[in-house]
Image (cartoon, rainbow, N blue to C red; front, side, top):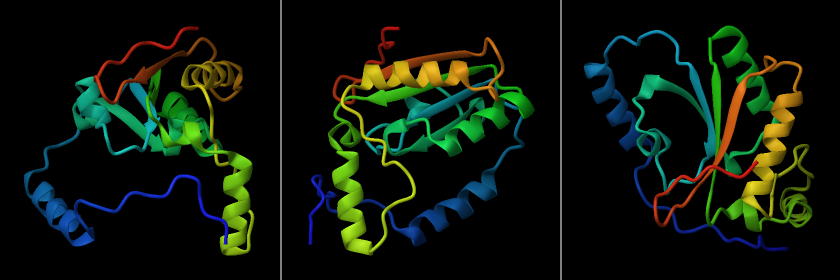
Length: 172
C-alpha cells in the first residue's frame, strides 16, 4: 500500500462530546445576530491559526470559508457567488499561510495513493500548490473572470506567517 507523503499528526484536542457540551453553553448565552457581513474570507483549515482572531473579527463580522489549502474550489466559488449576490458581501479576503501542507502535496501522487487505498480515484482535484503567492494570484485572476462574481468586486490575497503572526499582502 502506498503511503501518503505527509503522515497526519497524532490527534489532540476535544472530541465530539466536548464540542456538543460547548454548543450547549453557547446556546445558553447566544445573542441575536445582526445584519449580514460585508466581508468574506477564504482560508486554509489549518488549526494553527484562528481566522477571526487573526483578523480581529467577531463571529458575525465575516463569512469565513475554510478548506484544505484555502483554495478556490467549485464549492468555494458557489459560496462566494451566493455571499456577493444574495447576502451583500462587498469584499473577499483570500488567506494562505506559511508551512502549509498543501504546498507539499503532489496532486497525482495523492490521488493515486487514495485510489489504491479506497479503490476509487477522487472526482476532485486535491489542490496542492508550490508557491502560496502564485496560487493567490491565480485565485484572484479566476475570481475576476468568474461570471457569477460581480464585476469590479474587491478581492485581495495574503499569506499568514504561522510562526511570526504577520499577514503581508501577496504581491500582485
